[in-house]
Length: 148
Image 1 (tube, rainbow, N blue to C red):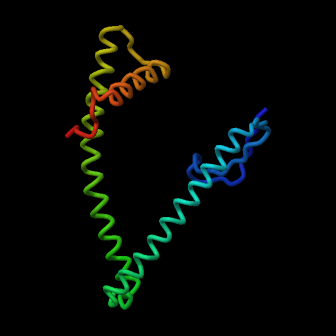
Image 2 (cartoon, helix red, strand yellow):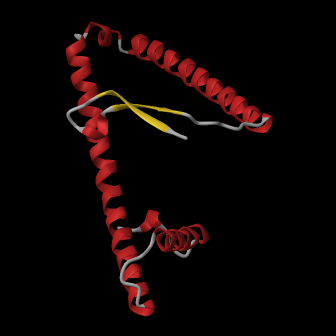
Image 3 (cartoon, rainbow, N blue to C red):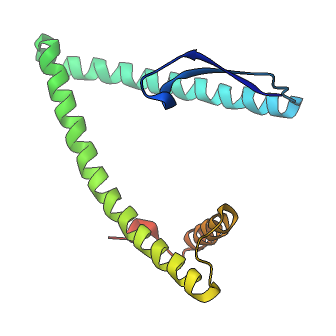
């Protein structure tokens, strides 16, 4: 039987720390090997990215030696400004796409309710609809990247 124990209470209850115990976990070698290979790929990817970033630092310092003279506060401010602007541009585009997709989903849900008489969808019905939509997207019938 799974048991839960409150370890650290937080003013927002959902952020309280809990201990979960009494579980039995079954594993097999195939899962462990798959996890091992995944870990190995992550190590390789991080090492490659690290090598690239270190080379980039050398390149920047070589071509723009004054960059190392800039105070940390100003470097952080410049970086934060750049990253925030980048995020805003991407997020605004994605938000439009998701809102359009949400409209289509709402229309589909309303049509399902209208055609079937279902007033509230169960989790299973929502899963079926989600699967249908995913299939449409994967088959190319609906291209979420072109929604604007």
